Amino acid sequence: MVPNHVGIILDGNGRWAKERGLSRSEGHLEGAKNLDKLTDYVFAKGVKVLSLYVFSTENFKRSKEEVDYLMDLFVKMFKKNFTEYNKKGYKIVFSGSRDNLNDDVINVMEEVTSKTKDNKNGTINFCLNYGSHKEIVDACKKIVNDNVDINILDENLFEKYLYNDLPGIDLLIRTGREIRLSNFMLWQLSYAELYFTDVLFPDFDSKEFDKALEEFNRRNRRFGGIDYEKKTN
Ligand code: FPP
Image 1: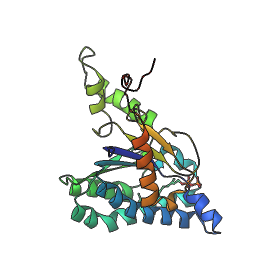
Image 2 (image 1 turned 90 degrees about the horizontal axis):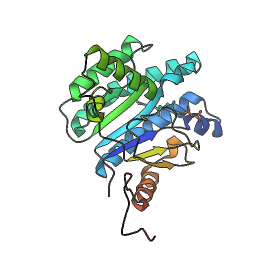
Image 3 (image 1 turned 30 degrees about the vertical axis):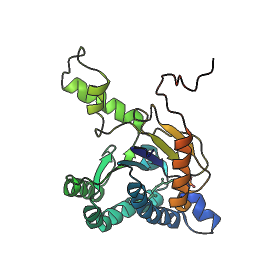
Image 4 (image 1 turned 90 degrees about the vertical axis):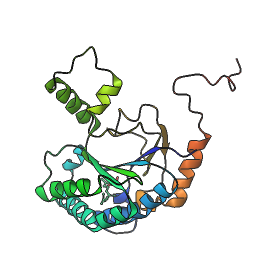
């Protein structure tokens, strides 16, 4: 089975660079190049939604040099890629806050979103300046602002107030040796299968993605129910 929605926490660009005597920026560039190849592979496998944690709200705590480099890289990559996204039919959406983002970044995000909005061959959700707690608090604020009747508020309606209306994540992959969620899509991860790998993101290629899929297919997903065929007592 192919997961419908895959989330990836792309970690380890800095360590990948350090291990090779390169700068952190070179690691991020390599990560971005890898991401382009990986995205095509993931959609070719039949995945419909790919959520990518490319910059957390907490990442603003990094050095100004690194933050500036990453922001420039986003602008360059989105400008370079969006003809490709259209050719391939990928719809691009962004999740996150606009606070602290500069106009160049916001403008390119808006342009890419509007120019790819009718595409149907897969959705890439870039989580940029994203934090899950903030997403949930922002949703609550919008609900209060809309004077939503609490008697009709349920999980389905709540989800409509998140940054994007996306299905739950089926498979979460985190590269780069850490075993934590780092405030990534906590609402959407409630029934996800979690896959952690030591491979650093620039080295996470199609073969590594296949390993994650194999592991996903070994899992027995019950969504809180009981698998009576397998239960022995
Ligand atoms: C984590 O590695 C990675 C990031 C904070 C940035 C991820 C961004 C990219 C791969 C570029 C994406 C490009 C586009 C166009 C969306 P780290 O720096 O935390 O690595 P470390 O833990 O080894 O230091």
